[in-house]
Length: 117
Image (cartoon, rainbow, N blue to C red; front, top):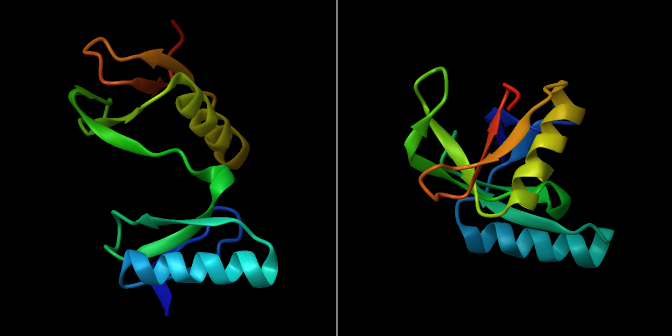
């Protein structure tokens, strides 16, 4: 079923919702076989369903429990510097945001920031 709340970052079209990770994984495998498209499931924090994303856009992150952004929300933390740079590049090309990468002072991976060091 198509989402009422989540839309593709590039296409702007509603994303397909899957109830379980296995349903999403099955759809990803179908897509690979029939369309030669490599997709990966992800658990959407916005709608609590599963969606698919091109693996080239995958930059898994967790919330850092020590660092907050200017809006008071906990910052995303990326496991590697490369993952953080990948997300920064995606945000630049899709939204025009120029972001820097820096290592978390508490050892919780890597963060993004608008300010220059």
